[in-house]
Image 1 (spheres, rainbow, N blue to C red):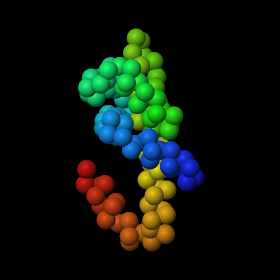
Image 2: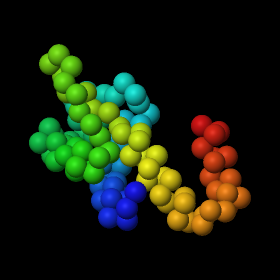
Image 3: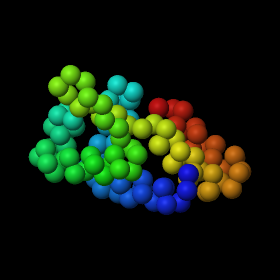
Amino acid sequence: METEAALTILSALAHPTRLSTFKLLVRHAPTGLSTGQLVEASGLGQSTFSTHLAVLAKAGLVSSEKQGRQQIQRASIDTLRALMTFLARDCCLGRAELCEPLLADLSCC
C-alpha cells in the first residue's frame, strides 16, 4: 500500500459516523448489512448517510451488491488488512517483537 492510499483510507475513517459504520460492517463480515439497516443504526437521514457511505466506498473500505430490492454493503477486509499491515510494517521496522502485543490483542477477540 502506498502512503496516499493509506491517507485516503484514514481520512475516510476520521469521522464518527464513517468509523462506526465501518466497524459495524466488519462485525457483520462477510455477509454485510443492507443500506437501510446501516441508516437506521446511524440515526441519520438517508441522504446524509449516503454521503458518508460514498466516502467509505471511494476509499475502498466498503463495497455494495444488489440483492433483490436491497443494496447490501460489505466491509473490505482486504483493504483493512492492507492498511493494518502498512501501519505495522512501518512502525515496527521489521521487528516482530514490537508487534507481538498487537497480535495478542487481536487474537483475544
